[in-house]
Length: 124
Image (cartoon, rainbow, N blue to C red; front, side, top):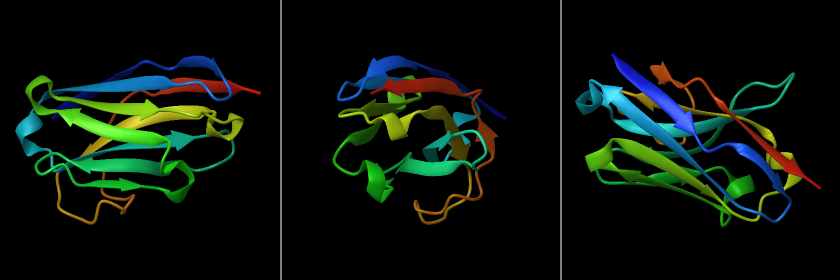
């Protein structure tokens, strides 16, 4: 089992920045990739970005390219999401997730473990 704990959400004005963290514990050696998802009321979870645990390859959805950066610190078993130039449409609950099985980083399915979510609110 892998446990995930997010932190770093909050309220920020449009154009501002936030950094989310996701600390993994447990059987972290089994992780192939980690991703950040977001969800707004009435909508499904959207894969925002993902990173391979070994190698560090990344994927970003088009709407966040150039604004968001995913990174990892393997020594700390932590993944970060740096969000810059935030827009009101980025408002959502953000979840980190981990998958054990190899697949394209752009694939939103197959995630085995989920964090509890952290609220990000961007005011206009």
